Length: 158
Image (cartoon, rainbow, N blue to C red; front, side, top):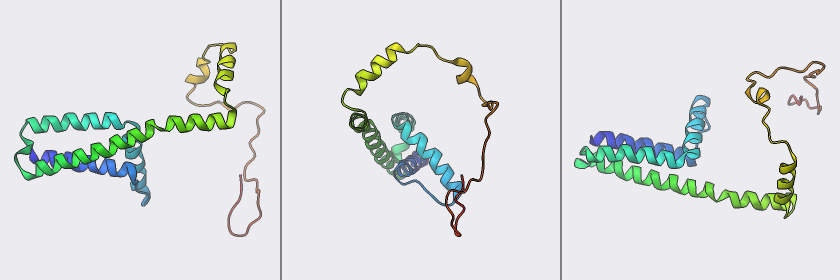
């Protein structure tokens, strides 16, 4: 049981560390790091919850009987603290976004949005939403490889 709690602590610490400092190279590890960090930061409270429940089960089962269990619990607590701080920072971003919207759209942008929303029809275009594979419209021509800057070093094309 002690080794199980130590393993949980190591996994929790790696996930929390990855949330703050993801791996960028090599590519396969960067992809794994991205998805692990994305899930961990977007669901930080849920991550803390499942780790806490698992740690509690291990502690009740006697995982604190040896030093590996104590180290694992310490790692878990550090990881939970880091994830809680991450979740707190994410929750604080709504004020920043609101100030940016007010600066860009004006102080009364929300009132104008409410008026527009009430005048708009309240229905969802379900065939459009449920369409998995977009069907190209007839008459639309796609132009490729349009060079927008002449440079001998790089391909600057759309």
